[in-house]
Image (cartoon, rainbow, N blue to C red; front, side):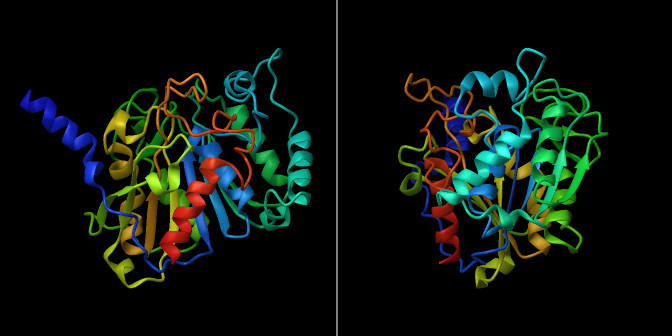
Length: 325
């Protein structure tokens, strides 16, 4: 019983979580990245708020609005497409992007021109197949974004690290971090942010659990979020990177594995970078069925999920506003 209670305290430290701090962070030049549903979410945040989000890194994710509001399309066409469940044509998705922009529901797609985009597709990934990532590449090529595509690593469905997680690079298993001797977080941050100082060898900042409830009402998100705050960022002026976990990878599923070990924090320490780790929640409600704790890239929260009006995009944008206030 004592061990059970202790485990609860480790997994759910934010029973008395503090508010998200105001840190006078840079309100623009935000970057984002994510794995799987988190990759789709990073793309949605980028396209919806391209005036402030300057770049995105995606592992095992596909093009904007791929699911088109359909769970069936999300599960089949946009994860493991086949001849009978093909990927939606990228041209149609780009056309819908233009329609949304003209209606003012997303920022102007012209902002995506020259945006920095880093994409990763593991050759052993059977959950989201490499052609899906290549479709995302074609989507961004439409806007002449500055692309890097990594498609040769023998990785399963996971965030790839230099030294943390599953020792077999090819597996797909919790905590969905695979030690492939490849620092994906570092590589994507270098592409998105430019020249960076070498990462720290030991964490020098603070990993904070914060109260997500002021932002997450009706958004299918947990009560708890996480923030990595380097010492240098207490004084303000730092950039912000948003790191979205994948399905079955939130803190209630894997503890603090993703927020501590995905590789972002050691780069943040030496490069004046705040890392925001928002948390999606699992739900068995028939009105918002999401038992794996995925981010909403098919419409389980509402039909506006992929626009500025989407509940999760509004929540993350409000967190960014708070950090920059």
